[in-house]
Image (cartoon, rainbow, N blue to C red; front, side, top):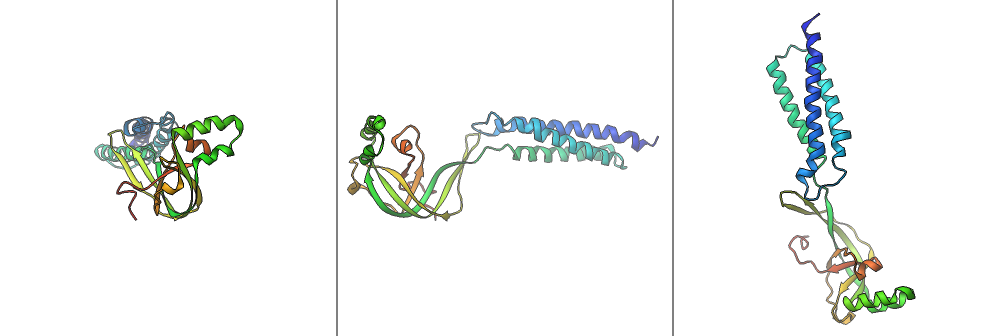
Length: 224
């Protein structure tokens, strides 16, 4: 029996085992090693995708190389290179997820109404709760006619570094937002051509589905 026929299954088994193990390890543990807040389902990438796919790829490549005249040294170097490629490809699939931090909106204020006026618009069962929330957080509700908008995105790495960037501008639309005003009067609102919109949980704005609008305060949100 020719030597290459005997060698091919051995090379294929080695390649499949090594690349499969690398794909599995990087896919299963990569998110926990890279992300500040790893997802509970992230290891499934290694179990069901990168591990099996890398093993199958290694098996096919191993069979093909096993029938060549390449020396064991060349086969070893090739395996090492493929291992690095497999690791990088697997890790690229489990890097921390990009999350929206805020939305930057440019536009003009169309209408303004005190938040206190919202009490009359809810049912009687919720009026007491809404009135209490307004007392704790006075403000106004603005109707913004947005001309353009874009998201401020973040990616939090386990090393303590948080990456931030701005998405491309998109056409804006009209929406209602909440603005903190101590007096609760529209006359005291300081309007701005650009606002940063964020969601705040367990507060009056969330109760009505409004986002909180503030003028941009950082260099990043002030960029064109």
